[in-house]
Image (cartoon, rainbow, N blue to C red; front, side):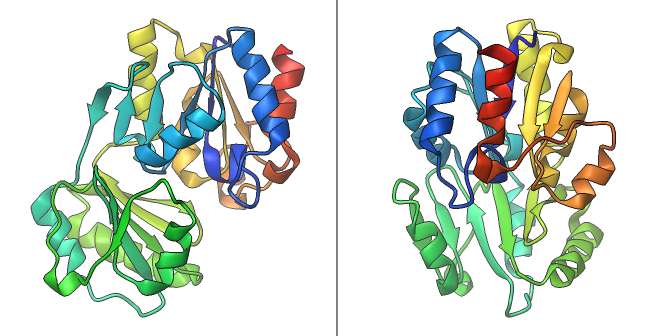
Length: 264
């Protein structure tokens, strides 16, 4: 039996509306009552994550946010913190972007967005501070990550190539979804964060089970004892991990149902 359970949020534990179903909440509550450690690993901001932890009624547990750039301990203390270099980040800010690509930058206190069409998406997260700014008058300070969104995947691939060519020695890039490109501090990932937590808790990495659906889950799903891929995950992720088990769909509470069979 695995000693630790880790789950991604969007496309995994959350349904198609990016919400927790009552079924999932009850299953996680039962898991907590049995004393099975469960924590979240997400690309979301840690302020966003803390709110969802309350909704799940999780006891004091570790939290991995911003794809591993932030890790908070059981008492909310900051254990791991990685930022993109300010100089590099401000060079990235000045990139000429295709008009279809919207972008935002995560900092510790809020998310800064540069495109009005992103207001609705961030406005739905009432607990997540955000601010619309004009990039011409903005200077980045201690950024955690850059986030780009575009429905045209090919345009993001072109942007990804430019970023790697210009700043590949300073940052890493990843596609959390085909429509979402993220720029991270070098060598930061959910997998790296999990390794650090396993050391702190003296848990063998093989004793961990994890669930995910995006390419930002790739390392996490490849290093743990059992890495479960969501049925709704991209084919690229499934092909990259051909030996990993593919389970059901996020909007059918697949993670909760899998955990019920395993532990409850």
